[in-house]
Image (cartoon, rainbow, N blue to C red; front, side):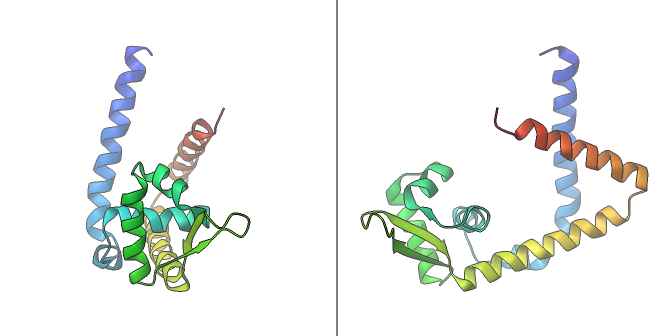
Length: 146
């Protein structure tokens, strides 16, 4: 990688951090008032985007062991945000999925975030909005598996 590209990458990362710091104070209060740990929130978001999955997949995705993942999921079950059941094809396999309450919570948080972003994007001039679209499409393209 050449020096110009490396410098530009660092500048983009710094800008991303500035954007986060700027929009954090206007983040919907509901996001900040959710009584979940970061690992618990990650599990809920993973289940929201990927659907029901095996415990092992969750543990691998979060980079934790099965014992740790079991503890996280147990707490989410006690809060009635996740349900756990055996796989129909292999009863030894445990599958986790969002409960109705868990799906409602994440859907509500997701919608609040969409409203916030929509309001920010509406403030942009059309030309700048097109640049944002082009940049996000470029990120999506480079994130695709080879």
